[in-house]
Structure formats: structure tokens, C-alpha cells
Image 1 (cartoon, rainbow, N blue to C red):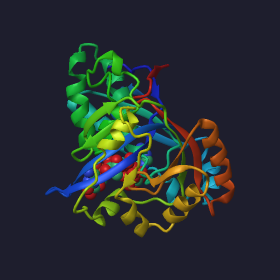
Image 2 (image 1 turned 90 degrees about the vertical axis):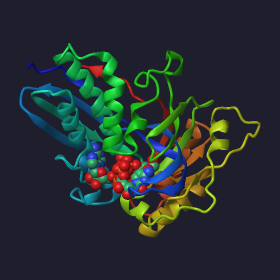
Image 3 (image 1 turned 90 degrees about the horizontal axis):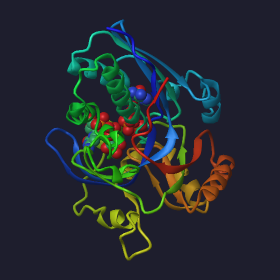
Length: 335
Ligand SMILES: C[C@](O)(CO)[C@H](O)COP(=O)(O)OP(=O)(O)OC[C@H]1O[C@@H](n2ccc(N)nc2=O)[C@H](O)[C@@H]1O
Ligand SMILES: Nc1ncnc2c1ncn2[C@@H]1O[C@H](COP(=O)(O)OP(=O)(O)OP(=O)(O)O)[C@@H](O)[C@H]1O
């Protein structure tokens, strides 16, 4: 067994433009109809295969812990900045499962630089896990060249779904799913089931937004435990057509049924929605299970200006970023 080179990538966050609950399942999960885009608010992940067994993960914040704590107006040891480095981190879990599944000896050395807040509904942990799977696969192919490339899809998708409902989205729609080359560059998907059944489609136009994380984390499991499945669920059909540029309507509406239970869990979500709606932006909503909220902008210039205004109007600490839709998965580089 030899060590591999370093593999690195930049896991993106996501926004749920639409999220409706269709049913509660026997296993405690909910059937969803959700539309997600990947956005260019990114973590950084690098890893290599080592002769030493296990996963050695180190985590830092970008540009550093003190700067992020300062933006959030919390101390450096606040729990908002806590990221596990043991088996609770989805990166460690997914690499252990990859080693088991492939029967690999040796282990992994991993550096994760966080930018995406945790407990924000932005899918940061899930995106890190999907990136670790893809980097891990590439590094394993280097040290075990006999592995058949054809098994990549069959192997990675079930592992992703096992780790979390959002993880398969971050594996992307093109290269991994064996779709034709013309679908490379996909930023958007409609997800059903518990989030793992995906139909990827290209956006007619890139989307610009401002995302506001109001220095409060919300547990996904807690939000779902307080939600109610509506008697007449809405459908994302019209939104999907509009995003593809296939609708006669020029307007569309966004929706998130998890907003109500999340607002009951964190008092920071209402001011976030209020400030965004006063910033001259449109379609103001929470993403996923919260607490981060977003609003759409017409251009990157409008998003940048609104983000600047929001930094002076939002009461208290927050991470506020102009963002743009981006492609999943992100590129892999080898050092
Ligand atoms: C809110 C979203 O981010 C929207 O994309 C996802 O639905 C959540 O995905 P995730 O964070 O990957 O969630 P998981 O780690 O799979 O599940 C965490 C918990 O959320 C609840 N959960 C999650 C997904 C789902 N479709 N129904 C649920 O009820 C379950 O109680 C589960 O125990
Ligand atoms: N790589 C990671 N980055 C950030 N948090 C992580 C990571 N791995 C595990 N976690 C843990 O995940 C939990 C947050 O997950 P939760 O589902 O509540 O929030 P989220 O922001 O919606 O993330 P996701 O959508 O990726 O699950 C925290 O307890 C955090 O410690």
C-alpha cells in the first residue's frame, strides 16, 4: 500500500428554492418535493490516502476562526463554530464507509476548511461528504488501479444516500450519473423521495442571490419533528418549468413549508427575513431547515450592493454573502 497524491476540491452550499412536504413515512422521514440549486459559497476539502489506518481530519475556518467569530459577534469557542473531527463529521463517516466498501487497507489524511455555516440549511456537511466520496474514490483509484471505473456510480450513490438525504444532490447530475456530456454544467435539481431521487436540469439563466446566516443554528431533525404535512401540498411543477425557461409565465413563486417550524425554534429567522425583504430584493425565503435565509437579485452587482447594505442594517452578528448558482460537482484538482 502506497500513499496517494493530495486531491482537493471546493464543496458548494445549496439553497432550496422550493420545499414541500408530501407525507410522513413509517421510518420517520418525510416525502418531499424540493428544488435545489448549488451556490458558490464554498468550503475547501483536501485529502490523501495514507499507510496509517483510520481518518485523521483537521478542521479550520476560512480565512480563520477569529475573523468568522468576529463577523458572527461570538467568541472563538462558541458552539456555532464547533465542527466535529471524529466520527460525527460526515467526512469521517463517509470515508470509513468507502474504505469498508472497497476493502481498502491504510487510511486517510484530510484537511477541511469551513466557510459554510453548520445548522444553516445550506447543506455544508452534506456537500463536504459528497466531495470526500468523490476525492476518496479518485485517490483509491490511484493506489488501487485495478478498481473498475464502471462501478463508480453503483457504489457512490447508495453510500451518499446512506450518509444523508442531501448528500446525493452534491454528487451532481452529469459525470457520475452517466448522463450525456451535454448535461455537464448542471446547477439545479428537483428532489423527491426523502431527497435522494433526483432529476437534474440546467437553469435557463444563472441565479443571483444574497444569503444571510443570522448567527443561530437550527437542528434539521428538530425542525422536521415540529412540521405538519399540509392537507393540499403545493407542487414545484411551475417553478421547474420557469427555471428551465419553458414557461409562458415570466414570474414564479418560491416556497418552504419548513419555515414555520424553524421560526418557532429560532427567533433570529424573522429579523433575517424582514431585513432581506427591505433590501430591494425579491423572493425572500429560508433555505432547507434553516436558519439561513436568502432573497433573489437581478444581477451580481445588485446582490453585492444589497449584501453591503444588509451588513449595516441587520441587527447583530451574521454571515452575509452575495452568491450565484454554480455547477455540481465542483472540479477536482491533484497536487
Ligand atoms: C432540509 C433539507 O436540507 C432539504 O434539502 C433536507 O431535507 C435535510 O437533509 P439532511 O440534512 O441530509 O437530513 P438527514 O441527515 O438525512 O436527516 C436528518 C433528520 O431530518 C429528518 N428528515 C430528513 C429528510 C427528510 N426527507 N425527512 C425527514 O424527516 C429526519 O428526522 C432525520 O433524522
Ligand atoms: N463536515 C461538516 N461540516 C459541518 N458540520 C458538520 C460536518 N459533519 C457533521 N457536522 C454536524 O452536522 C450538524 C448540522 O447538521 P444539520 O443537518 O442540522 O444542519 P445543516 O446545516 O442543514 O447541514 P446539512 O444540510 O448538511 O445536514 C452539526 O451538529 C455539525 O456538528
